[in-house]
Image (tube, rainbow, N blue to C red; front, side):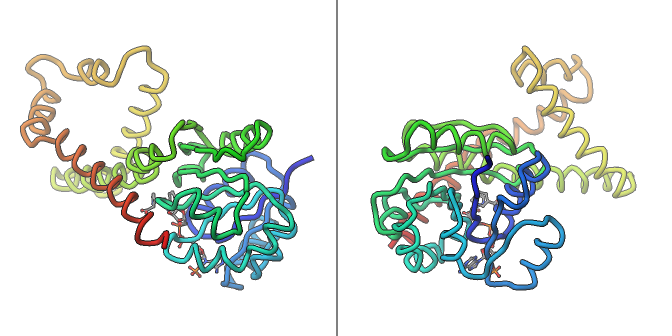
Length: 273
Ligand SMILES: NC(=O)C1=CN([C@@H]2O[C@H](COP(=O)(O)OP(=O)(O)OC[C@H]3O[C@@H](n4cnc5c(N)ncnc54)[C@H](OP(=O)(O)O)[C@@H]3O)[C@@H](O)[C@H]2O)C=CC1
Ligand SMILES: O=C(O)[C@@H]1CCC=N1
């Protein structure tokens, strides 16, 4: 018997998770999505056959697991009206919001709830997600297993022992897809500058990223060794890598990820009031 999962907010992240779950065989009738946008909900019903509601409390009343997937800025105004429904039913709460702390969310929902904070990413849509999870002390072994199962259906799941580490997960994998998309954009542009048709440059860049990640995931060697294997002495790759190192790419990546994690911490204060 599948648990009924209600996604409060059916935007980019929620649709990536339930899209991946549906592709993995999760029954459409066990998934509910909510949105203020009727047209979006009609499209979701038509495309996926899932259940939808414009009223969040109605969705909570029917759910075993409630996934909070609205923007952190509006989370409080979405959670507080759900207090009564949540307290009556005590479903497992899973928040995918960046920054917002478990105790803050639990408080907005009336307290004493099993709550998991999850930092997923959008490649969940193609079953290649990566998520960090933290469970508050009220989450029991069965609920932990359930959340792990749901998310591992759409990708890698890593539990973290301390909630604060979710800000680091945000910097690595939550926001990470955007870094790679930026890199792909830059590679495409550089390929065009070197004379390739844009579509050819894009396809080659994307397939190379996919190939490098697939290979690294399966290899017994670490990425540093795999990189050295591409660098023939006095060859072309050596020049490119030297250029990256001289431009302090590692320092740039470290700075960007520190900024990302710092913003996640700030968001807890800005939007957790
Ligand atoms: N995008 C990403 O890669 C990741 C996002 N996250 C987290 O996921 C959460 C959602 O982000 P994302 O999916 O990008 O944002 P989106 O804006 O794409 O999705 C949020 C959705 O919530 C809807 N919404 C607004 N008000 C309500 C309401 N009262 N009740 C129900 N739904 C409502 C919005 O509708 P409308 O647009 O009509 O207002 C929108 O469709 C955030 O908390 C973010 O931190 C976490 C990891 C990665
Ligand atoms: O940019 C954000 O705030 C969200 C969290 C991780 C990815 N997107």
